[in-house]
Length: 350
Image (cartoon, rainbow, N blue to C red; front, side, top):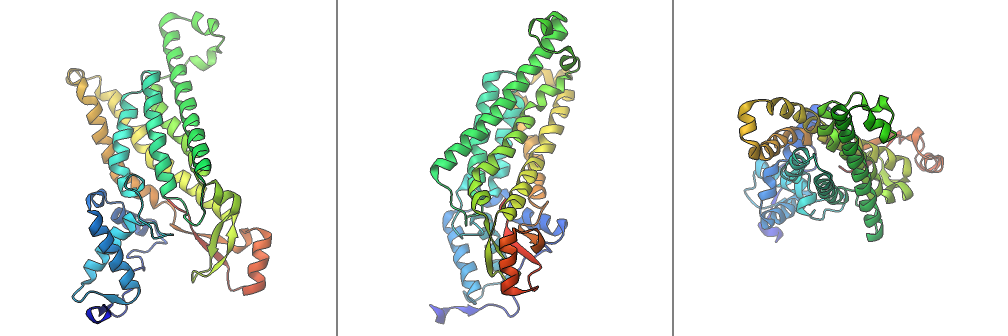
């Protein structure tokens, strides 16, 4: 009851970011805070309590004796587990705080089991299933998507990943065969010799990254197609809704695609180089059974930093100049607000 509640400390606004979101370093600190993998282990009751505390703070009332540190920790849990648009609790697998434990296991396996087509197919399928859940969970919740559209997006992205992965995997095998058996291989297969002359051993190890990058370019736009078709809600600086913009959606989704590929790149490009060198040592050849767990752990090390760094590449609250909006929406805003709205803002998703 209100009689048992205290008022929020003067000048404290729980929704004001703790760090400057106009700079990369500020955004990095923010995402290091909310993508903390330890928040995955927080019980559901504690998350619900954090939400109640945040909502109470927004209303100006908090439990007596609540410190600013307690309120900020509640906001950290709230941001890590609840959707910024709808306020609904996100499924565990789709949360950005689960990207490190989930991503390290799947990426490590993709990098370890790259030699055979069945293994490539299986782990790319697992990865795209994981990505589909993450993309759906972190969409702009103001744009609903049907089960049929989710299914089409999932199948299309998985097909793109498999086509890229299997195609490149077979290409590297043909290259290796030519190196072993001579020029008759490319003649028999009618493959131009120029394509087979230089295929370094690392190329096969980089196939998973090429597949992940190709799939991200398909999966994210397909999963968020409603935003591209109907536009996403844009607001002024004071969060007053101004209309829906397709151009804003395209900008936001493009930034998310770039962020996701950046998130995966260091681990999936640098780690194969490290493993290629390490596997030449005798001690590494004796412990082949540990190569998989080692890659999983190393992937975790990369993702621990790259998840918040990639999320911080662009502001979460994205902006678009009024001049770049669709003509009809721009004219409508100018008619109502004159020159008071030079930029519009929207949640780009993650």
